Image (cartoon, rainbow, N blue to C red; front, side, top):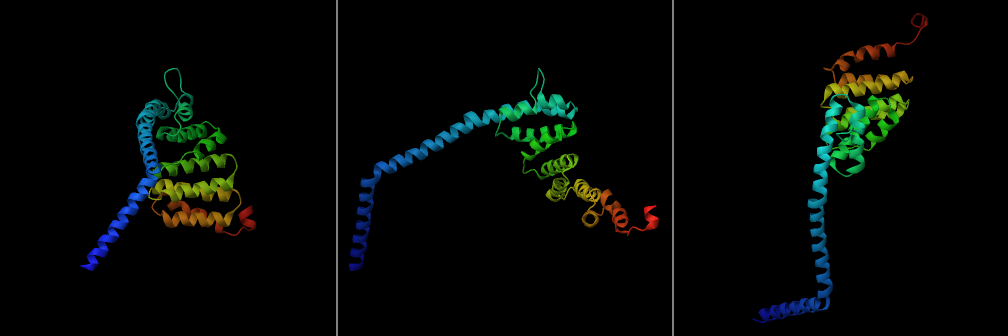
Length: 230
C-alpha cells in the first residue's frame, strides 16, 4: 500500500513539474510550433505553386528542343528559333528543374558535335543523374571533349569513369575503356596502355573491342628492333 502512495506522489510530482514547465515556457513553445507549422505550410505551398508548375513548363519547353536534337538541328536545339525554346533557354530560365539538368547534358553534346569543346566541357561538367547509362554517356562525351582539347589526363580519367559507371552496357563500356587505352598509347604511355587493353580483354571478352585487344597488346609488347623500325 505504501508503495502505491509513493508512486502516486511521484506521479503528481512529475505532473506538477510538467505543468510548471508549460506555464513557464508555453509562449516560447507555441511560437516554436507555429514556426514549424508555417514552415511546413510554406514549403508545401512553394512545391505546389512554384516548383511543380516550373517543372511542367520546363518539360514542355524541352520537348521541342529534344525533337530538334534528334533531327540533328543542333543550333536550333541549343538556341531555339521563333517557335521553340532551346536548351540554353531552359538552363537559364528553369534552373533547379529536372529538365534544366537534362538540358545541360544535351547542350554539352551539341557543343561537342559542333566542335566547341570548351563549352562541351562546361555544360557536361554541370550535369549529373542517377540514370547510370546516361551518366556513362556524359562521362564518355567529357572524355571526347578533353581529348580534342589535348588534355589527355582528363580524357583518360573520364573514359575510365564512363566504363566503370555502367559496365553492364558492355559495348559502350568496352568502347570507352578502349579509348582510354588508345589515348595513353598515342601519348607514349605504352605500359599504361597495355594494362588498359588487358582490362578490355578480361572484362569484355565478347565485345568487338575485347576481341581486338590482343592485337594492340601484342603490337605494344614487341620490343622495337632494327627490322621493326624500317
